[in-house]
Length: 117
Image (cartoon, rainbow, N blue to C red):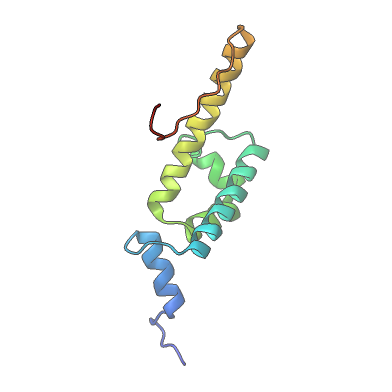
């Protein structure tokens, strides 16, 4: 099949639909997104950048290739969600570490939906 100057392949159309959120990603598309996210976050870690939204310029400069892959392989809403989640997760882990240093005892909480006897 020969594509015209402005025609897209079916794969390109599908990828654009996933990025726009108009179709749900398949299992393999989700895996590809998660791998791109993990690569992007590893780059942010290497460059000591916690918040890619707040430090957008530094993140773009330090992790341009990883950012391009991340934004290409994930739905736009997922990209924003994952960036916000990263900051919250780092803050949560830091707070837990502070609490443990102050003598707090870790509690394991299990939730199930079994009927109570």
